[in-house]
Length: 362
Ligand code: AMP
Picture 1: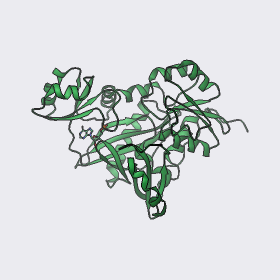
Picture 2: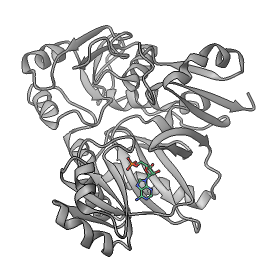
Picture 3: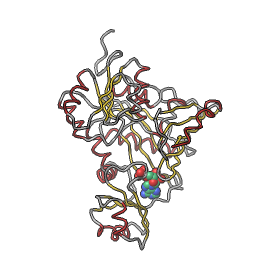
Picture 4: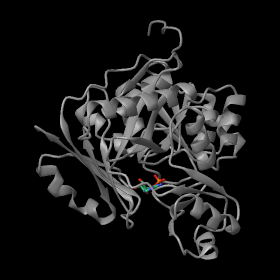
């Protein structure tokens, strides 16, 4: 193979590493394979979805330094599919001389809702109004300051609406504090949004930026149910949202794909909810409806390859298959949908088991 251009960290025939073994890692690994790369997975989970398509897997704890050293020995660059990988794991890999994209900075901001909302605010990306909550006694004054309706969210390890409770005037602060596990939290004003959208976008280490058309996202019980693309909103609103995601990627000096989830008001106003320093469920449709999808784009960015064209060739809708819904896969195979199944062995209630994309026109 000829010499690679400067900035290329992994070439076809070489291996990249993925921290985390879930469905996002599995789809990243498939995209990497399409580009001629081998994939090494590091995950504490046995028999994970990603491990079953990877060349090699290390099943070990995040602080197992010997396993981490072995994992990177033959791996040119490392990425992640799970934002709660401990930052110490990433520090260890970088100390051992292996670059991790995205790096510790983006992870540290994304892992702590207080750091995340503060970072948004400091960089002109307005979040909903929020207060820091360190104890049950902080709850009532914050609830009053936020207008009497708010959401209490744990600062760390929350996902898919877990670790959250909606509070209204008259709420019992002690019960709310115990409901979120009596841990450090933030309280956020309840936003009467008209729509939820996300900007899924990519930035290369040398500053190239590409974004997909933002989808409208419909959540049920805090979990993404459907993404409709493109979002049925004005071009101005979507361009403003994309500009905020670009600011975020630049301020984080980000390399890879990220997703910024936003609330849109009736008047088109935008508030940032949270961001994911990784490929995102609301970007799954891009592989079916765009010239280059999020998984391929992320691999390109991580490896230091040129970014591809995110232009969308179809409209449509992505539907998550949750829990037992995956058992309908034979029907989806024949009804014109693009079917993506994650190979998970047990269809636990609410678990993300697969997704289907319906394009129009087909
Ligand atoms: P999160 O885990 O923070 O993304 O929250 C999960 C879902 O809860 C969001 O997608 C919204 O549907 C809803 N939600 C979160 N924060 C707020 C808020 N401040 N106001 C209204 N709804 C919210």
